[in-house]
Length: 280
Length: 193
Image (cartoon, rainbow over all chains, first blue to last red; front, top):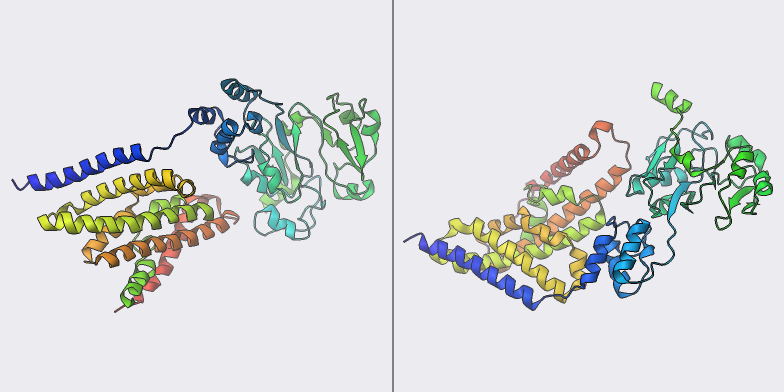
């Protein structure tokens, strides 16, 4: 008989809690819009926050309740956005997928080093020491703050230069907000050609600091059939609303700093300085 | 008052749950990567720990003790804590959605947090009164908060350090945790009468 009381007490407790919880879940039930959950499932679920809402849940709610366009999500594929629009029976809005590009070609070999940096492995820290160790003040520091920030593992910082893998990049723009030099730009996926330089110095000075800088020679501006390129303060800029991807600018660029999107995928060249550092 | 202050010192420093008693190591290592998430988790722990201490004390005093069933403490307390957390979650979701959102995933995680069970069992072992038990639970939660926030600060700095390849990630975290723990052993010399 001595078993009965303990069993009754523990069993009774469990029963009490079970009934109490099921009762509580009825009394305190919160109505959730089914559509929010469905939209949430259709979103990529990366929770990157690039849409400006608190993760995918926040965006799903905003899409259903506040009529925000599903194309706000830059990570989603075109099919995914269309699926949401179709599910809710709304217009998906203008879908323009973006991809991040580091507008610099200054590897350690291309742009020399001002000094030997031994500090914390972080671009912001290096930037505080007279704008980083790269000779070019505008260029990539290459310590990979963007690489750490990227939730998709699309960036790799090797040989003093960060590079974006366009196949993995979703255009969320988190890397751009992390770059102390502000040289990560979001460009439309469809536009291949980009000026990979951010240096605003005069050609002669820029050339001393980096082998592959834009010197503002205006050749690309003259050759462009659609007037998509303007040179401002010794730096060429491409207007993506006008660019038709003809590639003529890349052909005439004497510094070869205009490249198409494929360029990001080229294998890294072994860097002399890196090898020297390894050998030591 | 003096008694309660002694309990606060005891639970926060001398017997810090994470660093001296090694309870709740899982969330300590799991959610200490960022100070913001550490704050969310420790907030939930303080909340649940205080509540659970009160409820388990009552269960022990009025259900188990009268029938000499103290040997059922562990299983009964697990039951109570799990049900309580679930209930709190349901109520918060309805009445305090902002707090529910802030605590987020950490609230259900606490169900399996041994720090909560640990404080419930310690309360009983030490024959605390109701007020003392509740305060001990609260202070233990504060101690957990302190350990978690201290450690998340260290981990945030570790991230930018140049760590040898073999030590990257969990190894260096465990080494750092052991050093912080060693530092807390110093409080063991503090004797409260």
